Image (cartoon, rainbow, N blue to C red; front, side, top):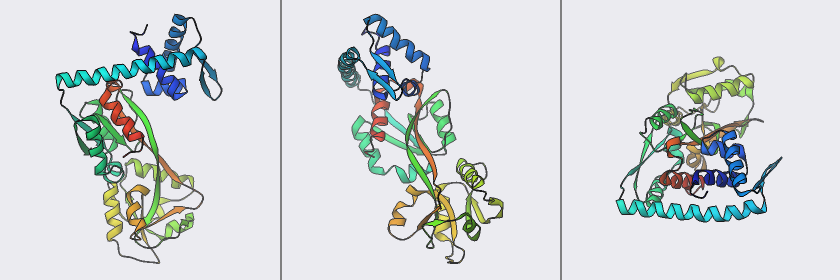
Length: 300
């Protein structure tokens, strides 16, 4: 039974995620398949190992005992895998890809150095759009992708990383919050038509009854850096500030130093999720696991 570590890995994942559905998403298999594998273990042991509850799952006494045993087995397998890699002197460059906001403003250079030291290999960072990163992962050009657009593909595994917030910003002082009527008083640097950020912002404004077509648009730009630089270079005008919408992470330093100013729509937050993405072929890859867990831990 213990030779079949795939089923043991499923059990560990269910126990750690406290959810069959979350374990299914993490493992990249269907929820019925997860249930079937747990049932197989229970039949083999002739004991119930998991109780389903309304708010998740609970390990039975037998499940707790099994968890301790399988955790030890997992550690032994990982240690052996590292030893094997040392023996064959496997050398590789870890290929990380990130969308513009994440690669330019969320992941600092020190993080790449830390990852490199942690896995004992060089790390490269490629910055591109989320859709190109997804395609690159499918073509095995990258090992992990960090994306800000929910572009889902059945060949990939997705881990929710953390929530990002989009804010209105300017090089001219802004009130902490603005009402929808005040949005028409600004001069706008907008994201280009077709971009995910443009789509997200348009949906928010549409929900609020705001017509973007009535904005005074100075220009349209293709990425976060272009929006940031366009606003920075804009002529300051207290009566009609030049504004754009951007991730709060992209301007955190300038806001802290009083060089840029951020504002939010009264009673509303523009949120989106950042995702860690990798190929289903790599779901048991020790290098991938180490990096994903390192990034999720918040050490970067």
